[in-house]
Amino acid sequence: MLIEVKVPALSESVAEATLLAWHKRQGEFVQRDDNLVDVETDKVVMELPAPAAGVLSLIVKGDGSTVTSNEVIAQIDTEAKASSASTPAAAPAPAPVAAAPAAKAPAANAPAAGEVIAMPAAKKIAADNNIDVATVAGTGRGGRVTKEDVVAVVQGRTAAPARPAGRADPMPSPVNIDALLGDRPEKRVPMSRLRSRIAERLVQSQQTAAILTTFNEVNMQGIIDLRNRFKDRFEKEHGVKLGFMGFFVKAAIAALKKYPVLNASVDGNDIVYHGYFDIGIAVGSPRGLVVPILRNADQLSLADIEKQIADLGKRAQDGKLTIEELTGGTFSISNGGVFGSMLSTPIINPPQSAILGIHATKDRPVVENGQIVIRPMNYLAMSYDHRIIDGREAVLGLVTMKDALEDPSRLLLDV
Image 1: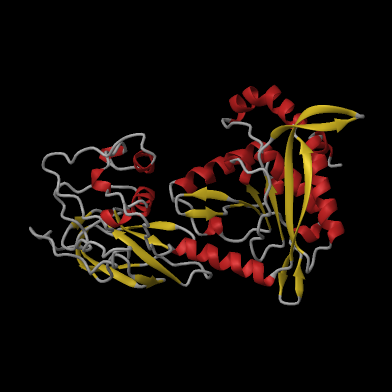
Image 2: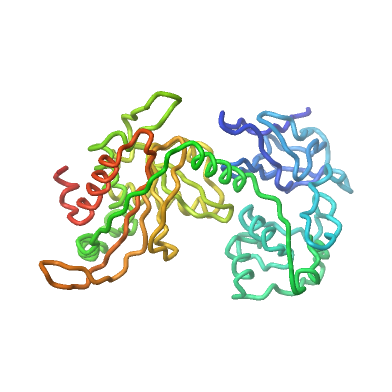
């Protein structure tokens, strides 16, 4: 019996996807739920499991192919037996273009002998840095190459080991190394779908919204004292560390409730006021910036917020976020402080109308009661769409966040 392998149903906002890499060869026997191929959309990388056990009798679309929702990309014969010599899959995508002529691309689906299994995030980082995953020692289950293994090689903490005896020769480098080591090196690499989508949305935001940014500063001493007092009990009780982001989310919600236009969006000539609070948390991932959503964040406890943020952040690094988790949102928070940023002007994530940027907390001299004292200060920046949000609401909204952060008891008393 022939079973069709189809591209998963994509969300309405995703028109097409790209087949990154087949993990099984044509003619090879596969078990049900084996990962056949990685499918990249402009939001996530998904693993496509085998719908049934059998022989992968036909691969219709090879590596690098553009596909659409529910398109047939392969067939599985549930009654056939695996061939002794598997047939190569469809032709892969062209190798990246470099300053000098690129090396010939390898045939799709490397031979099974000595085959290296690598996680999707590891493959992406390796490809971006021109590293052959066959030269990276895998520390994951079954010798799988993980993201951390590749990052270690990139950062020079470990050297790529020599090829073990019996392993197939590594794939040729997609770039001319001699050219890259010249006096004026260049390398041309196509954007991933996610990077292209990020570029499109940022330009859209700049071109369609009247973006202004208002700033304020917040004394973090109250939250630091509260955190130091309860962090051990909090972690023991809830199984998650007490961070700072939960307080920023709570403070933002307090401001959005007080000034609903900050939680609104523009639809043509209409202003859409949202009666719910879906907060996007900007997270850096190996594939670029993603913004997973905390649904109904106003109904979450501080512990629930911290748990969800930790989970979303980990799965963003592993490339495991779903399209649904990246869709929607009424307000966003971007934390440049984790990278050491002191001040920035965040760009609104359309169709939202405002975004909060938080930064590194540093000891700075401030004036209190006529005296210069040292306090842990954090600069807040809120960009807003001036088409629907006036300066008054923007400034007062940011002041509300500042007040809630400087005196966390306000969040408990809702004042």
